[in-house]
Each structure stands twice: as structure tokens, then as C-alpha cells.
Length: 153
Image (cartoon, rainbow, N blue to C red; front, side):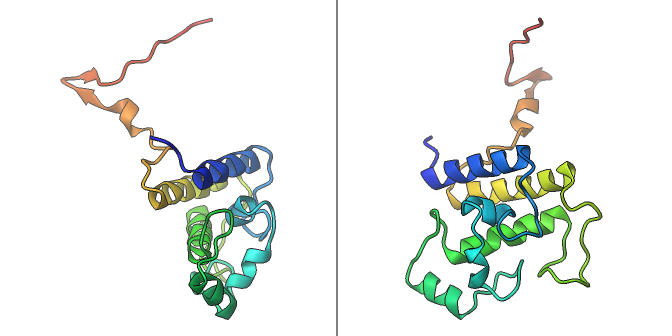
């Protein structure tokens, strides 16, 4: 199965941001959507609140016109961000009195957010979740379904 271009590009950008410590849930240009959109924060004008899935007037216009940003509609982008923030432990929309994780850029926190985002991105493109590793633990009559060659150095 061929991976759609928008999914492939989003995964590469998120992977690089994670490993280069350039992912920050509280920054509109360094969050999940900010990274997918090449570290631009103009997407924040699609909604009035960071983490909300409610399109404002500008967002509704872009949505109705069928506009896409790096392959994603305004509503898809807002959903991506909401999923990311919630999986990182934030209460959305973001505001100073809502709960947030103690260490917002902790690798475990960010990994949880990215895992949820990748699952959603794959679902949008009708692709099996590329991060689903449960298949490697499948067994039949107590024998593993998938076998791997183990190479020792």
C-alpha cells in the first residue's frame, strides 16, 4: 500500500521535530500542527482558542472554499492539534488555569502526543497505524505469527 504524500511528509516532519527537540505543545509554530505546516503559526487564526476544534469565521471560510494546508483542511488541522494536546496531558483549549503536564517537553509526554497524532493521521488516509506494533506479538498455537532474524554482533 502506498503512503499518501501528505501523510509521509507529516510523519517525516514530526519525526524530525521529536528527535531534534523542536516539538513544543505550547508554541503554535513548534507544536504538532506547527511542525506539519513548516513551523508557521498562521494556522492559529483558524480558531479563537489553541486546542479548540471550533473554526472561527476565517477558518470557516477556508474550510468552505476547500483550502488545504500541506494537504490538510482547517478542521483536520484543529483536530490534529486537539488530539496532540490532550494526549500530552493538557486540558483544551489551552489557558492559564487549565491543567497541563508538569514537563511539557518531556520525551515521554511528547511521544504520547505523537502516537495519538500518528494514529489519527493514518486514520484520515485509511492507512493502518504505522506505529501499531501489536502485530509483532501475535501468536498462533503459542508460536509467533511473525518471525525476525536476530543478528548478534
